[in-house]
Image (cartoon, rainbow, N blue to C red; front, side, top):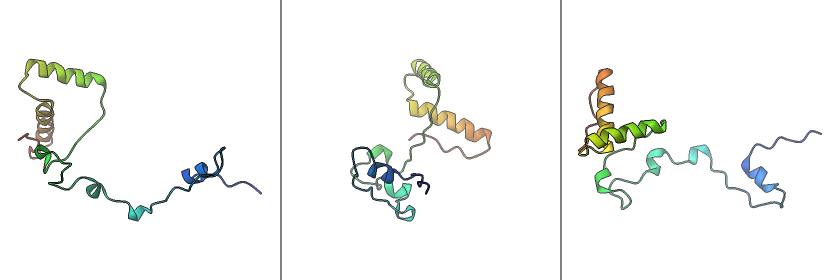
Length: 105
């Protein structure tokens, strides 16, 4: 009789070399909280006042991208990194004929 291939992390941990462990609680997919439910509520103590009503937009880039942004910042010290990214996003929106919405307050 062939052994069943173990694919669940709980099964792997339960049968680890040092003996059975407590089974991990499986949360059904439908019971998982949505991204909106995981983010702090507007006005909650964990949300900074300057971030109320805003969302985080991120990406991973080559380290040279950050270096170049810092070079631009050195030439324009009055501009924050967020200001520079808002300007770049607005140029992207303009190129695609979309409303410019990335202005920083």
